[in-house]
Image (cartoon, rainbow, N blue to C red; front, side, top):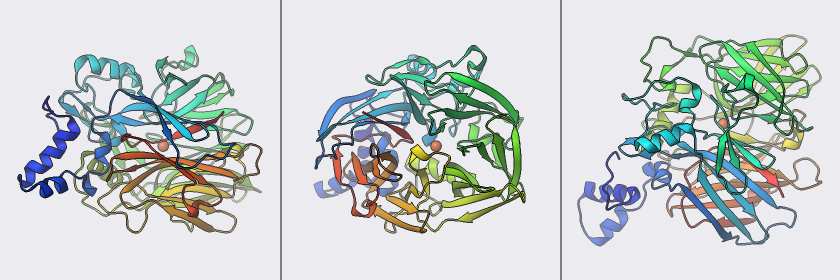
Amino acid sequence: MDFNPPSLSRREFCLASIVGAIGFGSSEQIMAATETTAQQAFSSSFLDVPESFGPNKVQFNKALPTDLRGTLFRNGPARMHRGDTSYHHWFDGDGMVHSFDLQENAVTHRGRMVKTDRSIAEEKAGRFLWSGFGTSFDHSETVTSADDVNVGNISVLPVGDEVLALWESGSPWRVDAKSLETLGRKVFSPETDGLPFSAHPRVDPQGRVWNFGYLSGTGKLVLYDLDPNGSINRVSVIDAPNADMVHDFAITDRHLVFVLQPLHLQEGLAPTLAFSDRLQWDDTGSVQVLVIDKQSLQIAHQFELPPFFTFHMGNAWEDGGTIRIEVATAPAFKPLMKQITQATTGRPMTDSPVQPQTAEIHLDLQKRRASIEKLPTSGADFPRFDQRFTGIPTEQLFMLGRSNDMPDAVFGFNRVTAMNRRTDSEAFFDYDANTIAEEHIFVAAPGSTQGNGWLVGTSYNWHHGRTSLSIFDAQQVQDGPIAEAVLPYTLPLGLHGQFVPA
Ligand SMILES: [Fe+2]
């Protein structure tokens, strides 16, 4: 994959390599060989990704509900190859922001790479210059600040006419919501210039934005309290154990909750080593749960749980004297990282898929006791809920899972689940086994009661090389999409998004 002959596109080159590997035979053999295999399913989405997509208007197969109008913004790693260098880990790719503008019968799609300082320097150099989250380059240049290596590739925060492209260890990047052109690095204030602003901010029902940033190796977390327009109310720095990698957090109406894992940054290793290779999982350690008072921005309670790994949280709320936090867990960090590397590079999976499990953490504030309980759902990750009720009880939790027939060789998910937290029941829809589903976002119907609306999400059919946008009735997920639009191309498999109603 490090050599790209000028006469072939990278996709053609890879396909030709497969043909070459089996030897040229009959035309039927060649046709069969050029099909993407399950092993290549994930990595195939990152071949030949252009600098931008669209605008392209694509018809839905059915008209959309009249009150479903607006724009889905998504972000994700997109550029994995530059010159003679390639990333080996999904999380390393340069960010690309997409917009899916919904009309009555059609969607207009745009996509554009986020022009970070890093990507500008690497474009000039014609190759990747720095090691990343999961890729080590021996030639890696020295990192002088987090924004040297910021790829702006995880999620988005729409603010006014802009969309902030979020990474988790550095600054957001301002992107024009219409053209998706990058407008520059976001500086909230001189005091916070260059501080990390993580990729999973939480917006409370009043529109106030809460977020954090972690400073690996310092034992500190930065806390942010922002106005709905993105201006800073307060910033605070707290001491936090186990805060060397923190991807997500949760809020209730009174508290911020951090679930901090026994994942520790090792000192004294080569500075060119990828970040994830410098993290060590401590099986004998514990998960530290910090409960921060929103008024004082100080630690109000601290709990301990046995070790488990998590990237994402669903909703959280207070139920009498108990805080409940929905959390997508995985047994361990390193096996998951290994699988992501194998998927990103198209290598065979050496282990069966890591089985994430959704759970609920209970924090009894009076008795000062913490426990974690598995939830009866096949939904595993990318939890979403009705965000109008962030921090207060929600009945529906939407996630992705894997169908029984999804090949083990394919990394990711193809099931969309809707779990009813009141009845402990779930409904789900399985895309076919040749499809990888991406995050599906709950979009509330205007003026509706909780949980009424749609799920809007993208999926990649690696067999046909096409990405689709699907709309589900959130109350009838099992019935499958009520409308679908198939884009005339593959989009690189991405991470998170937000919907902005018209
Ligand atoms: Fe995430």
